[in-house]
Image 1 (cartoon, rainbow, N blue to C red):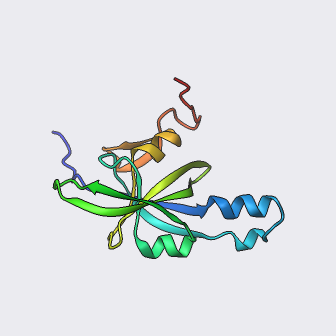
Image 2: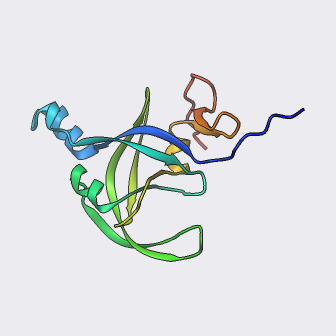
Length: 143
């Protein structure tokens, strides 16, 4: 007999950091403890391409909203948003550098396919967790 399980959202704890603050800290311009970062619970969403954050997180991280965009959600609704550059996403011993779509009233942080791919992660639908696509070894595609 096959075991039934409930399909659900995969939640994962990640840390988001301001890349420009990290660069300033490495140059000695600011203290390491002044690097703006926040640990959040995100939804690993392979249906989304990008990291999605809300305006409150953008402000906490001190990210600049670089340009206006229009996002298309799963319901086909067009949502005005901003693109913020310079985010470092960290999960366990893996990290990715990316931009973030800033949707002002987003209820959840979405960890999309691009940062997942950059960290060589996949969503395991059976265990409902993210895991290394190649086990503990991180591989980066060069083509």
